[in-house]
Image (cartoon, rainbow over all chains, first blue to last red; front, side):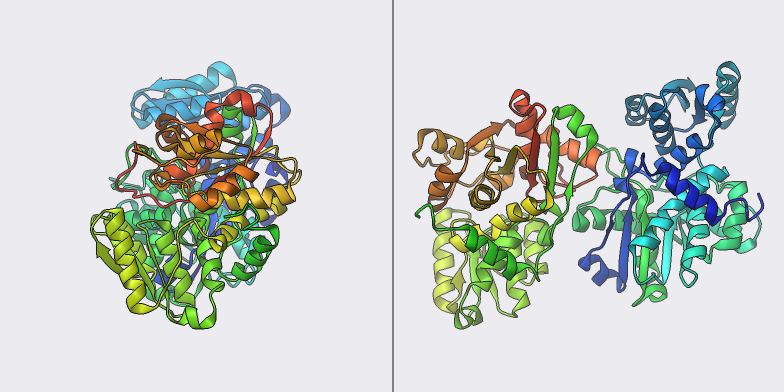
Length: 317
Length: 317
């Protein structure tokens, strides 16, 4: 994908399109966390977004970009996570089906969430090949449009509305903007918006050390596969989208990693100090700041809390 | 205490006094919870207050009402809960000591919290008599002023600022306002403010069925002791303050109870659906609404989330 495949105009259009369906999430801060981190942090609370994650933005934008005759046949994806729930919610507004292919070993809580939003689930074996072939079958049978979880311009433009809102909510602009990076839709979209609106803000991807394909790819300037991801941040185990990679190379200033101990520490800090439920993937930005204190000392920092969907019966500590 | 011991003027003065030190907390809602409850609920998020509880309001007001020569000798209380942390924080602004008497079996997390806010802890045996005599010794030795956790006009006026803010934040006014009731400071203060500002709003105390002294007292119009409290809502095991009782009788429309299963269900709903950490005591208002659906069907309801201080290593489920 060329680096201009998603523009600021696309993100502005996305913001207008999705406004009736998603929340303008608040920006919060904590004096205690600032004291620990040694900087001035502003958290964009996408854990308070519809379906509990920023994924609502991209899914709604992608669905709203479909032509009416496409939309009528429904949408489809393979995902066991937040994108599936977001797509089911987006489809429900237009009373069209959302076909969700899920591995048969998906956690019951995720199955329940997708069903609660009206998703039509097809189970398959828990391999990438089975997911893709089952999805292809579903799309062929129903005529539904495949909406990928991150590697698509309309999805990226939707996720970029997070940074557009942040730019409106934060004055003066931050020195740094950090978002988690898994597939890269949030990071790429936010980087496009940030470079257009906040030219002096450095955009940093925050990645678990146990799933650091994006950092390795960014540094080598060669897309890298995600080999054997091992991290508590379950939303970030996926590889950086190949299509996203060029946007990240073009717009992102750096990618930094944090280890799982720091991610769990950051998650606990937010639960106990800010009284916000975030999922471990959402804590990676704060974990990076806490693990690289000199880089951020005394700075004004914006961090996206990407989501809050966690099984409260199986906490990661 | 006469029923005019706390007036709307006291609450307005408290609001002005404490404004530099406490948060104006947000009001949030959840479409999913509204659908389950069958009514339109607006939650006042005192879990996001300083020290994670509304107690910051009363403690700051009481400290700010002291004469300078009293304030200089410090403040004292016996508490193992949110009031102790709130008083320590309030004292710290004026660089005066906060002497906190705590039972020697107090949970480590509470001790840590009080220390983090600079409280000067004296441990004692875990009996009411030991707490009171130790507190008397501390006050005699230091000249500190005793700031009780709920049974005091300045504390009640401070807690009442919660409803003053709600009245400013919510339009049109709610049909019902529910607050948890333990010692009764929050309920009494909010009832005074609500009756002055929202004359058509019915004020309801929400109490755990396993610690329902306030409900029994309200219905019999005789103060009742708390005999053997047994509830997960640890902040509400205390008896209704005798001084508060007359305010509750005069200003509150009803007291309703919810059982522990409903309290835990409500707590989990808020964690999972609203992504907010609340303590079980804070969930009693929602639990009451869910257990009395016909009473609230189709109504506009305001509920105070009283706090968010919970040990995330020992969840109540």
